[in-house]
Image 1 (tube, helix red, strand yellow):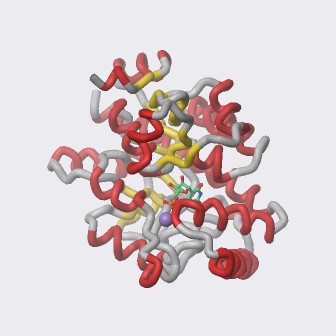
Image 2 (cartoon, helix red, strand yellow):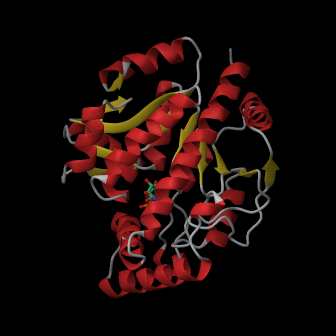
Length: 306
Ligand code: PSU
Ligand code: MN
């Protein structure tokens, strides 16, 4: 039945059959999170970092209505260049497939498709969350609901402060989603290693983290985890610089009446424009770092599931 919709790249299929380490990657970051050609360069480099760290990369996206687990280089270039790739979250999947369109998968939909293929670890930049002023706008990313229900560990650099990080953590707590700090007590805030908010648990090795994840799922505690991996110190952006840029971006979004699925891409592009590209370089570096940690986690988990 699944085969009717899902194409798993041969290399990924073989690794999964052998119960070897595989790391899923999203495509919204390629199509809507970074400009061309940096997006394509980054996506390809992320794949090579995953290989160097002993896992097989599986970039996920929808092409011509097919759910693709493991995009080829040409397909990654297509996702990075094409203008008509639709940002696709949980609600969008059936329609993008039925219409035979191209879809860039968000954290939520990448988790869903990774899970369908049997992939347990996913590396990205930052997750979606509760937006500032969500009390009025109700803008809460579907990523949070997905983390509550789908068994995939998401390695990220925390949440951007385009969001209300405190409210995002409250939501995750309600939904029973563990928020783990990788070698840190504090949830990172994407461009900076510090957010002022504590994580629920700190782990100091991939092995320790893999063990806790296996226990969670063995006990039937379904759902994902947020693994917060701080941006390396040398690439951090100055706290005040980035916060001023974010404040301005949020104000502009409000003035322009940006809503719904356009909000996150608008804010990402604005912050990049305001910081003169400094934020883009940090974004790239933190994704590389997440790919490395996700690979190590996937290697440890694959040992436990052999
Ligand atoms: N946060 C980032 N970079 C991103 C995204 C979020 O720092 O590229 C993308 C991810 O694909 C995430 C999506 O799943 O935005 C969330 O969108 P929304 O807020 O519309 O759910
Ligand atoms: Mn939203």
